Image (tube, rainbow, N blue to C red):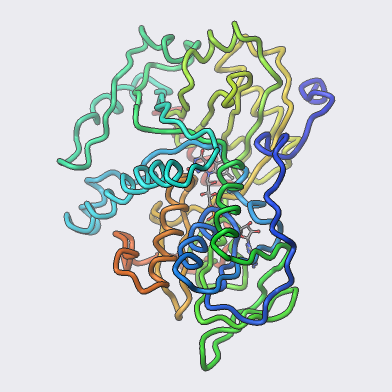
Length: 431
Ligand SMILES: Cc1cc2nc3c(=O)[nH]c(=O)nc-3n(C[C@H](O)[C@H](O)[C@H](O)COP(=O)(O)OP(=O)(O)OC[C@H]3O[C@@H](n4cnc5c(N)ncnc54)[C@H](O)[C@@H]3O)c2cc1C
């Protein structure tokens, strides 16, 4: 029965918030004007704010909830190169020069976040633990192994093939057909990273206003007027950093991102012996399914944080929790008696070309569409958007002007999602 699965102190809040005191934002009122108004207080918005405020622009970040309420405190804390299409596919679509430039941004984002966290001394458990990418079928393993090493000079991805016979040195299960270790991939504690960003944005002079929902953006002679639930603010520049929560205030962007719920559980503490057997390393884990599972040990190696998409349509964390638990037990049968202490969800933003996008539309800057891999990419593109506002050439990226596709009749409600997920599950069973 579902209720037996939850611990007595079960929460529908992210595990990452346990024991974490939120960074105080000073609870300011909305200023009348600013050089830069940033809508959305997650990784994208705050990294943009750090740049613009340090560059001398008066900067106001507004969030409809508390900053970090979106994905930026809810994610799995897994960091990769964040680009879904392969290099060959990118070159076919955009030509070799632009395709390579886009692929390179994934590497840039990964290197940049590592350097940034170290430079800023952000205490968020950042560690280059590596990823074990597990093959869900024999054919998936063969494809994975065959793809190793097929990258151009400068875009190599270090990788080590792990055959099924050696899999238990990575993961205590026989549920997979081997996999590949990507040693450069990293992990962090998402909410601690977000807190570090809030503190640095404030220290740089930004004003962060919570529970301030932007409902309208109008042009005026000197820039924009952003109308919010707390009044209006004039801005010379605006950046939209709303990703999977992009709403009607920016209909052009809303038509281009597909909000998809991603669901996560954390287990109650697991004995050291069992943890060492199931997860002998601190690596992050993902698998080759289209409807992917991603998981990892908690930073203190006492629990497993396990995520995926467990329902065709969006659902409640109390419903997704037992389903994720069943999927976790399918990988690690020894966890059948281990309960769930936290179950939560958040909306990622997919795009029709599975690429992140950044640019300027009608004078409004935006960065979004990280397709579920935004810890490094949202931070990096937010930072670059901030640099662009300062007029710095270094703010330009490989993503600029690649075109942000939508589909006829799509207005931001993904009516096709349930059918797509069902189709992907069917493919996962056959490939
Ligand atoms: C469950 C889950 C697991 C994930 N796991 C990983 C992972 O392991 N690795 C990885 O790289 N990525 C992962 N991601 C994705 C990653 O978390 C996101 O790509 C990233 O956090 C996006 O940051 P953001 O700042 O763009 O958006 P968000 O952090 O979502 O912030 C957007 C903010 O905009 C605000 N907002 C929206 N509309 C308005 C408005 N009109 N007015 C004011 N404010 C508004 C919202 O309140 C919200 O706080 C995961 C996401 C989820 C949900």
